[in-house]
Image 1: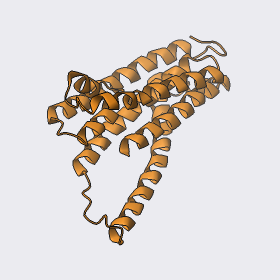
Image 2: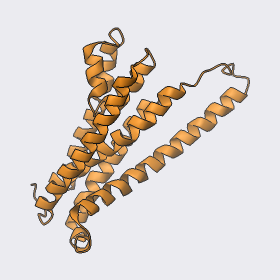
Image 3: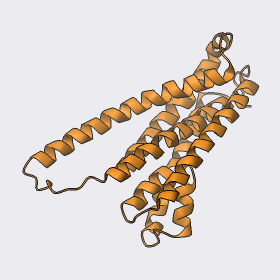
Image 4: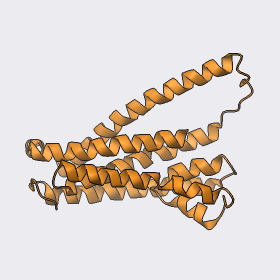
Length: 211
């Protein structure tokens, strides 16, 4: 469930963020903001604002799910003995937040590269497809949950969140793999922001055409 929520957030946020960047380029709002901000500050603020907006929506879903779970556990549904995997939920948050911000950075970069809204939507769809890739591997991983493929997908930043949670429901994932996934996500996120700043600076005054 946590993995599905993460994928929904990626689909929602990627589409919104890419389109928003193109709109601000077309309306030349960025020219006004860039007079008092550095490209890095502008890019970071845009990503943070849009990402937190989507995460707020996700938080509403999560709170609703938790309320429903409490009602089920408190009633006569026979689920009182269910055990909540707090370790998996904790790692889901630790990997999910930087993982989502990484997708947001990529979505913003695709929006900068796109020449118009249509291209931005198409690129956002491609990014959403990449976010769904872990689902295609789950059938193969069920019988090889600790295979090199499973470990590689756990460490790869664009699949680490979903695959880690999936593996944790079936086996004990070593802490070093989860810790390494978190560190790799943070490094890629920092590198992504740095790269996006340079791409944004190169294409800031290009309207209606791709970089």
